[in-house]
Length: 134
Image (cartoon, rainbow, N blue to C red):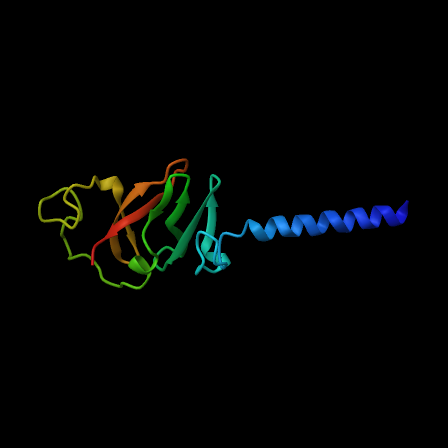
């Protein structure tokens, strides 16, 4: 009986490991984020999102999410590697000469000094960038 218990426990552990391997969301060719490191992935209300580190706040900000309707957001390189600030005193949204003339102020997030227009990811309270000023 003890041997049967050990064999059954080992079998369940193996099945659990296989299940975890299939559920990876980063680093494997079939995952939503094959080039992401594990620490770059956050699950928000069941939706896996790739994040970048915002150097100003020190927090990880979602930039691309694998929503039920498809990928939402931008490639992380659009926000993480550009270090430019908007012109001093210039409006970022809502005016004809702004970077995002049709965006509402709550749609704008500054990530690493780059103003980006964002959209709400369905099923979460997170906004991800869909367009960034260059």
